[in-house]
Image 1: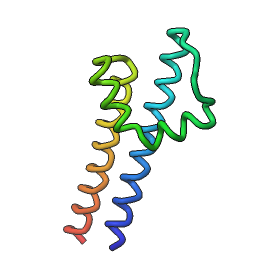
Image 2 (image 1 turned 60 degrees about the vertical axis):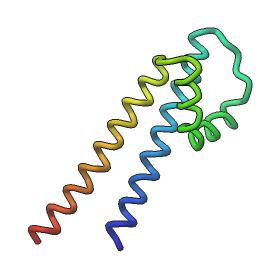
Image 3 (image 1 turned 45 degrees about the vertical axis):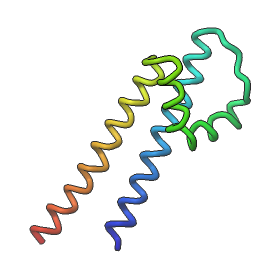
Length: 97
């Protein structure tokens, strides 16, 4: 039960961190392009952090690969690797104990 709870916590933390990367890279890209922000960062960053998978997909379909998507995709790969490495390490420790 403890392993499942730790896995869920790691998954949620990774989900939120990847969402934060998506939100911040989106703000940086729009600032670099000189586009105005529609929402205040106080509202926009939490909303983007929670709903990043849908926005990622929409950006990919409509605009193709951009630096924002590459950063987010890289963060997703790193987060997946960290979660799996922690899970495999726990499994190996449990087997040897």
